[in-house]
Image (cartoon, rainbow over all chains, first blue to last red; front, side, top):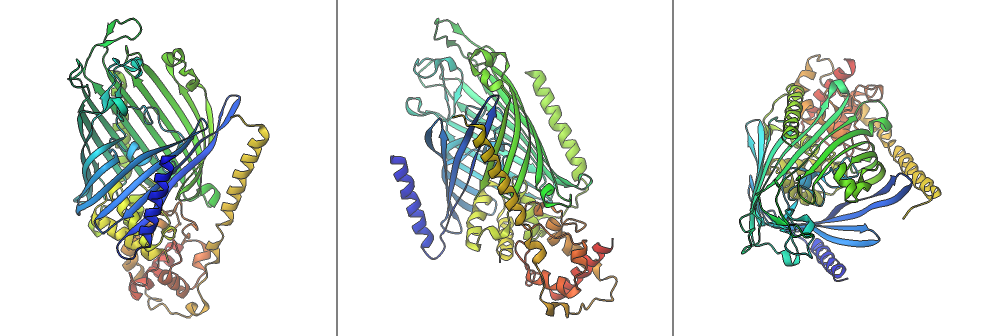
Length: 378
Length: 91
Length: 137
């Protein structure tokens, strides 16, 4: 309830600001999606989510932006703060950001996840909540784009509150997930460490059609004063994007790919069931590759509005951990673009949750699913 | 795991080679010489469809320009030209 | 929350209706007409067979991104616009007078921009010649 009051107060304040003459520019934007999901005999309405984005350009140099995520899940309405930050333009090639922001760790979490931008109704394996690598953080960031001859590069460096290792010592905090890194610790697991990270990318062609990005992230993750004090996390990501009209295909091809990896230094954990000690090589990874094709001159508006898309993604959690997993997923779909920000997606998705998934009752995920989703940006 | 990594890296290199081949026929023109219309088309489609200029008013485009400048790491010159083009084409 | 097959049909019908409505939006493209007085404008480059060459760079930096390199209306930025960019080689465009095409470049019709201020009159007439050339290729 308090959340709702807060939202109303923020909206009222911003709408007031909009009416003020002068340099202020306020804008409410965002995106929403909703759809139908069919698995074997059951079909369910899912993914009712609404993400308003508040943009407040206070002056030529200062921008405030915040995004809320309002989601209906299992009959409950969850409200989350995706980000809220201030960006201050230092000069042509540098911007300083302060607050909670989406992290440029690869490109998916920062740029490609919104429902009307993502060509699929689902996120790739390992790129959603409980994925591999960080998605957002609270701290300070310096970023920008720099022209390099006919090419261009972009950079970002940041310091944020660090993630926390689940060392399995607290029986109330999912001890079966010992060794997992919690990127958005809350309550008792408050972060004591700072994480540093960044991304550099190169756009080698002057038409900006290709981008290759490399990201890194480093932090101490163990709680001070425990045997896990010196445990560190190093994560990195490699992302690739290519969008271009290809004349001999009479259409536009769009390739997106990303590889995320997480390496946590070795440590011994205590099994919560029999108090035995165990260890494992704590490396996780996930990746996806997506190809979409959009015809542009088939002569009919209907066919020119179609897009076909295929995606392969895989997730691997460490062997020997109680949360070990090896999953793959294939999704293919056909999208119909009503206009530039309005899309209906029809997707068929097959997930192979692997042997371990079946055991732990996550076998449900192995089932095939068909989605019909409508997404729009506004 | 090792095998996986090799496959992925090999796959990415293959994609890059194909893309390089396709892109090599594009004429190179310094970004600084490009007009707003071209920058709008080339930069927006990196992530999403190029927006219709008539979707927003001039002042709205200014706020969106700042938002996208931060998100997409655009330079000041690029954003100014894109916003100028959108403001010209929306009426 | 499972639903019956009836409500599934209702849902699919709703989508079908939405799709149908979206096609109806596509018609304004055809109804954009230059005023009759535009037809009386005379192209100063009418008999200059080389004039199109001067417009080539302009076409590539301003028009190509939506109308495509050969003018087929298939540029990368135009693929999601409504109405879609005109196919400049089509009969619909080519049968218009030089004056009418000049008027359209000058005034625009969102999402088509107006080039009254960006391009000189001379440049706009040269572009008309370039469009004629695309049509004859």
